[in-house]
Image (cartoon, rainbow, N blue to C red; front, side):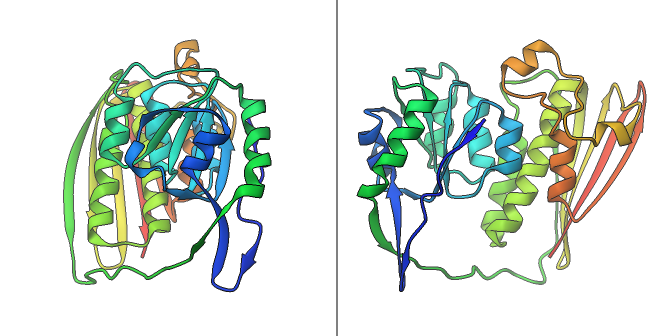
Length: 283
């Protein structure tokens, strides 16, 4: 895992110097997989990693992801972390639903023949060619009287659909108009929980509840259960298989990421029956 330089180093009045996706395309001599029409999208940070749980734990919003993991899960992870795009290094091209997902969610996907280290060096050098844009910002209003409850289903071992439920929840919260930072915390927590179901359970029911004071996501699965919850909450502890690790998951950051992003987390589990997560995010 390598995190390169912060691209937002200089601020001048109401202007800040940042980089555009088209600058990255040029610097890395990259081809466009998706997002040709939105290459003017700006970003502020670069995060290079093949471990998607680390991306969710440590990546900053408005970043781009450099990765050699050419899968849809890498693209979904970038979306959950509020990244602007993904650059696949070493000439890799995703062969699953990555392109369609990126198009549907306004993400730029690029592919470069450079390896990850050289790509980071090239991007760092390109800082001298940063583009100035005005910073604007206005908080979205939300209906304080709104109450919502919606139910979803997740199937275990369905890696193709992993992330669909958390993506839908994220879209719902965006439409309501919650603060992007709050939405990001909910999305990352839900995504990690969804991946845990896919990897370790048979199925799960997900309930999203929104009140004027709290967003709650309950994930109630039928699966293996957790023998030692305290141990499972320790960063780095994992029971993932080699196959799961090959997809960029299983680094032992799932439950720690959920705990980090929630305001209140309750876990109930029984071995051989399943696990129930209650995640609360106070408004």
